Image (tube, rainbow, N blue to C red; front, side, top):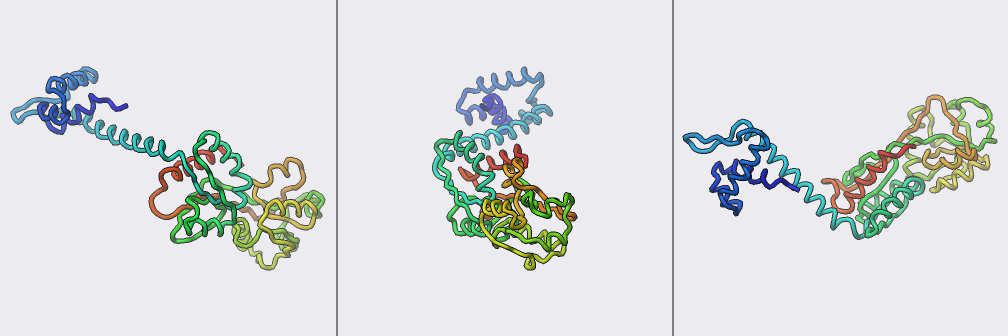
Length: 302
């Protein structure tokens, strides 16, 4: 709660006349004098000095006046945000998230959000990165959560977490039994199960392969699918290798259903990003939820 004495002092400092200040504040002139006196006693400093030209601020008074301006600005901002949040934290928020985020990251986060914000209904659509961007551009959703790259002039992205994509295989796969780091030649010759074109994972993988001079179009692709779960199931059969996010692999690595295969000279990292329309940051429910995502990401370890 703001200090009313500080507000009285601020008005008196601007008017440099206690009577005028009292009139502006709708209080008596002795009340203004009493508030100023209490502040001077509290700080042990004179705040005004009377000269031939009337009242003026002392050096201490000038310092306190500048503080009063900042304090009232902070208080106004706080009140505006709290009042906005009071009305914002109800209603429906339409979100879209790319597949890996929607399947492996958001369930725990959305559950935590729903438990503490019972008056908010979250409407989540899942698709690949291209589909999330298209939904946001068309105004069908208010926020998107994507993996990797997405460039459209009318949209803006902001990183909230970093993910890593790794090569995985069944423990019985011949390359898994070599007990060494794979070479780039091993990658080029192996059969693969990959995400579909348009997915953030596929885009990031292809860029990384091109950087190490492997042509993605020349890979031996057994199957393409939108589902990381399908990739995991096929890779477990030994039919080929897969590129998968660490987000998708916690259970399989713990149970040894799949193994990571380190590759010499290849590291694939990507940004998980909030996607929104260009312009000022979102306010209301969308802005609150975006802040929630950043808060959850700070406590997340992949």
